[in-house]
Every structure is written in C-alpha cells, then in structure tokens.
Image (cartoon, rainbow, N blue to C red):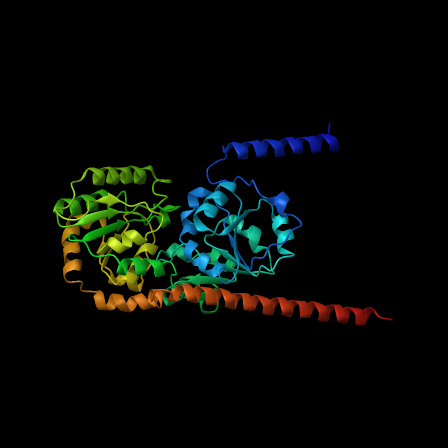
Length: 431
C-alpha cells in the first residue's frame, strides 16, 4: 500500500536524525563534508562581508586554501572577507589558523537568505570542487577562480574554469596556456594576471636566511594525481634513487618535501614516501651544517629559503621556485601523464627515470655553471610578473576591487533593464 503522508514525514525525520548522528560521530566516507552548519543561527540575518571565499572540502584538502591565508588577511584589512565551508571540522581548522571569519553553511537556502540582505559582491574559489556550484548559482556575485597553484600541467587547462566569470592567474604564461589549449575560451578577457602573492613573504624570508656551508637540494615532488593522465608525480619512480644518490655523494644536504596527498590513490607512492622519510631520518648529517630532513610544514617558505637548488616534478612548485632565481631540475614522469611544451619545461634540465644515475653530475653542473640562469630570469617575469615583495599582494587586492566594480555596474545595468522592461509592459497593458 502507498505510504501515508504522516508515514512519509516520519521516515524523512528518521533519515534526517540518522544522518545527523552519523555526521556528529564523524563516520562519514572520506571527503564527505559533515554539513554540521550554523544555518539556524544565520537564517534571517545579514553579514558585513564584501568577499566570500567558498571552500566546500573536508580537512584533507586544507592545503589548498592554507596557502592563501596571508593574502586573504591582507584583502580582509581593506574589504571584509568570510570563508564559507560545508564542514564544521574544516571551519575549526581555518578559524584557528587563518584568523579569518568562517561560517559553516549546510544548505543553499541559508546562503541565499543571508546574501539577499548582505553587501557581498565577490566570490573566490581555490579549487574545482563540484559543490562550488552551490555558490556559483548566485548571479548577483562576480565569481573568480584562484586555484591553489599555477603550473605547466596540462590538467590546469580545464573546462571547469569556464564556470567562473574570471580566473586569477600568476602571469602571462598562464594566459598563453589557456589561450593555446582551452577550447571556446577568451583567455585574454577572462584571465586576470596577479602574480603569486604567496611569494611575497617567501622571498623576504629567503633574503634573510644565510646560505649553509653545504649546498641544500630541495626535492619537492607532487602527488600521483587523480587519474593516470595527470600522474606527474615521481616519488615512486625517482624519489628513493634521487635522495640516496645526493646523500651518498656527501656534497649535498637533502630536504624532502612531499605533497600532502602522496599515496592516497596509488599505494606505491605511499610506500616510497615512507622509505624516503625513514632513510633521511637515519642518514648521517653532512660534514658541516644541519642534517637531512623531511619538511611537512604548512608553508613552503622555510624550505625554499634554505635551498640552493630544486628538484621537482611538473607542478606549481617549479613555477614558484622561479622567483628565487636559482637553478632547478624538472623530472619527467614515467607513466602516461600528458606533458605539454612550455617555455619553462623547454629550458629546465629534464630528469627522466632512465637517467637517474646521472643526477649528482646534473646537480653539480647546475649549481656550478648554472648555464640557463639568464634565460630563467627572463622567464620569471613571463610566469610571475613583478616579484618585488608586496607587489603581487597589491595586484591581487586591486584585481578584487576591479571585479567588485564590474559587479556593481552589472547589477545596476540589470536593474535598469528590468525597470525598462516593466515600464514597457505597463504601457502595453494600459487601457
């Protein structure tokens, strides 16, 4: 027999109560927001924020927004910023570490209610989480993608970018990449070069950090990626051999900085990561200066500050390192990852898996002769723009202000069109 309205209502309430118990006990599947929101307290209220940062992820993805904390604090000093999450655990972590205002909103209707009476104009996003569409619905906001790094990975050219009104990118290289590889996308109109504000503090720290008596090589690989075509990581294929060769040479101190997601998809990556960590922990220190180590600090700045050369994968780390002006070596993945040609990848010495026996000689040459230095410094401007400390943060804030001005003009234009349409309708229906 069909369910009675009362029975259907009871079942819905039981499901809702059961869902709340599961969320509060923290037994949700990995990557699922707990949606323990502040909705009841937010409904019927307004807030003073001009800028909304939408971050719907669970704590495992915090590294994607953490790199923006300093920049968002600088923006907040001039235009109030709120971070909106769907997960109470994420909210607690961001609130604790960023100093920004954070709200957990479980339901679209709550956000719609609050934004309808608030001065919010601009929404920012640091990833392409599908839940972003809960916020992208709002046509009275301008939406801009920030992402969490810029790189020559071909996967950075994504159709998902088209969902946003604008995309903040580091420099002209990113505009060129989008224009070259993205279909039906006006990169010149929709990409906004702002540099990498994260580098402002990192460069200041580096200039204040003395060089060690033994050159430091930073090995900073990326993770295995979400699918084989994006598997740019080299921890499993290159990592142990690179680290062991450099340590055993006795000429270099090695700092290993793994990606936070290493091993989440491919167990071999996790095994290699553990092997590298264990090896460095037991390896004898160089004859002078500090010992080898694994760096898992939230901020890459200290690792950059201490390093003389970078060995990395095709990733955003390579681009950020350009700001230091120092040499780098870029590995080549052994799998099916798609490698596009780019000025940086054409210039930087490549390290494929079959050439690992020569890694020490390669590092010797790059640190001793640095044959690509002049061209690398020219590429720094192409990829990052002005790297003077503070310049990128200012460009970022100025860009946010321009987008809010665009939003105001568009809202005014649409209101005018609606009023005009309503007037014409009235004239047509008047007796």
